[in-house]
Length: 452
Ligand code: UDP
Image 1 (tube, rainbow, N blue to C red):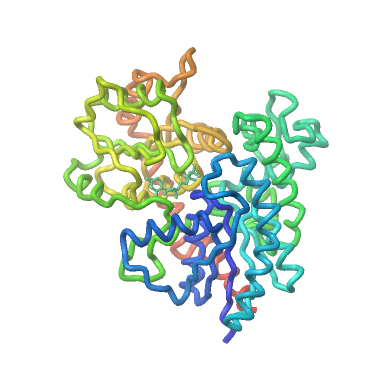
Image 2 (image 1 turned 30 degrees about the horizontal axis):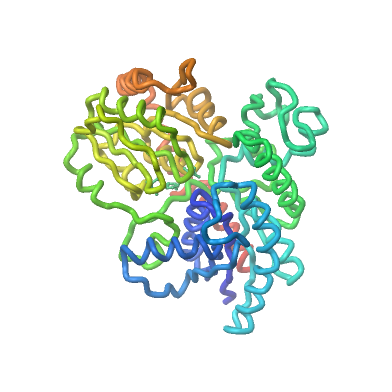
């Protein structure tokens, strides 16, 4: 039988590596082999975080390999404009060489490239080498529909040729889609016009190769985003793609985490009452300034309930002197899906990154939404206004979310039985997708195509 040998190419940030790793593990369950390509910088981080927790033997089915991203080791990779420029000038030729080297060194032929949409140039490399390809989108279907329709947005005068919104108004991508605010134009929500221009140019370049893709595989489900999915025919929902924590299974190991997971938080959660803990985590990018950090810390104190707060190692802020934190536990990085599924968790205070949203939805927890940049504002609106399974935090005149606002909204969320009920109902619907429902069927379609 034909064993598909996939080359998986994520954009080098945590929120893209994770879902593509989850997808890779799914493909391995269906008999595929994977070569997972990180940038050298990310590869080192992943290897070091894995090595700290488990003995790293080579997995026979997921090979982790790397190519340079063109930046120096201490360059700032959170400057996304600089990263995009460097990725595009360095990685395509390196990827081509990698594929040729794999063949020369091991005789292994790559049979398909699965590229992150924002590594879409990889499909052009595949075309040159006669390898078929498909794209994978790591955010919501609605945000893909937006990017897919960039030429139309320019033509309709909604954005200019650099991607910036021209007017502050609502618009519709297609008659079947609900109207969106220009706030949803995620590439213009990075707070630095030079970076936004570079990102937009990069996106347009990547989308030029999208016609080479068989599908745009997406970590969403049919009932979550029916109208966005119907708007782009090749969008294929396969979500929720969730990490497995089965440690006995070699393919289920944490092969994508940039930071070492602190499992002591699970022991701590085991000691907390049912449905009592606020889980507070803002993904891999969000950083607060000192004033906002203070308000958050003091807001958590004010609530006088247990909280689990992720403060990453790259946080440079210091805790305010009045902060007690006596009810809480602070860790650097958690096994997030395991945390969200813990019976002690009452709600998720989140920046609304799409992976966090999918993980929270699949665990049935209500959200307290605090978006930071890019697509997170749209995700917040969707959670609060369409799905009605969360509340938003508002900032005051000084631009800060105050400790009082945090306390008020957490109290409100804890008292809202309707939000809790809706969250649990949605969890069931969403999870049915991977228990033989539409997403399972779509995974089978992908596998059949890969084996053909
Ligand atoms: N995550 C984690 N432990 C943490 C915080 C986050 O494993 O303590 C994972 C989370 O499960 C998700 C990813 O990091 O898969 C963050 O992706 P998301 O799209 O939510 O946000 P981003 O990091 O892209 O802003």
